[in-house]
Length: 432
Image (cartoon, rainbow, N blue to C red; front, top):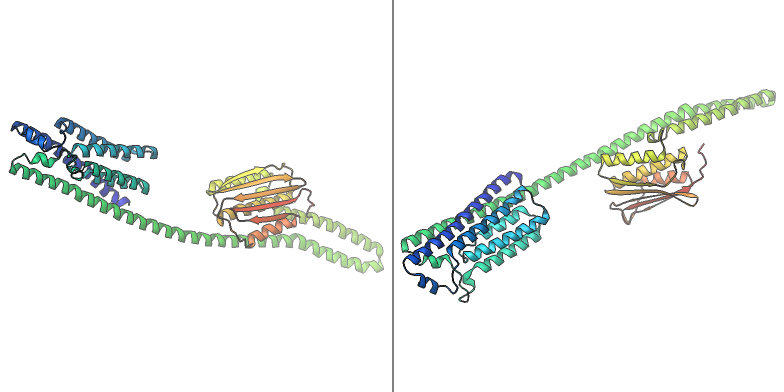
């Protein structure tokens, strides 16, 4: 709608000016006609055509012009920025000013109602506001139209004043009035047309942007899947190298040492015993090397830091890179988890938070770590879309296997957002 804003603004200002000229025309005609009637001694005839005494031309002029000036100022205030709470007050002021103008002009001119309606559509997207303003404008129109009240209440109208002027001047003034009001109506139609076209164009633009965003999202998901596959393959290759360089080497040496001991056992028991001692020492060294290899497989986030600090950094990284808000409540002690357990807990929470963002489209996640008797408990709850039926894919299966490997228990619940519950014993045996 941006490219139509300038045209709409121009038409809006033209309606401001056109209504100013028309209202000024009406009050001047009423003032001139009143003086004209008085100068020719026809005041008695004028009063006989009215059921109520007319308002003084000076009061009509000041009241109508001041009311329109206030109405126009309240409308222009929206261009400078107006709070929602002030918007309703300004609309109410416009309705009051419109009622005063309609009353003072005796229903001779109600075209300013078109200005009020287009202004409401221009500044508000709330349908309730539209309906409220349209109802108020209908009320102003009914209040101002003297012909709807019959003979019970004839308000002063420009037609009565013009009827006392000479034919030539009356026709000129009525023609001028028709041209002015016609111009105001044409401006109203043009502005309405621009607003409708602008809304259609805006809707098409939004639809195109959503379609493009959908395509970008699909490409992003493909990229994420590809990145995960590459990372998985790289991790597999790294683990394979670790096994080959540590466990493979140790097992090959042990196999050769045991074979040699078997050969020596019958012929030279002492040398066999010595060989077995060498095998035993090699086995201990291999265990130590394997343990070091497993230590290197820990998440880098846990290197030279505590589990709590690593989790805090994780939540901060998510907050800076995504819209996801994470509240971490850690009631564990710093020394509560050994190195093996810290890796399991870190990976578990990392996977849960990633799932909340990617699959649950959550905005908020709570991670609560606390103790219950002789067990550690982890509860992870998000406000995402959840799922009544949970089909455990690769990620959830990996979480379950990690927890079961340390003697723990895990449950998933997708009825209200997504909830992950984990508990495992405090006393953990080292994996090696």
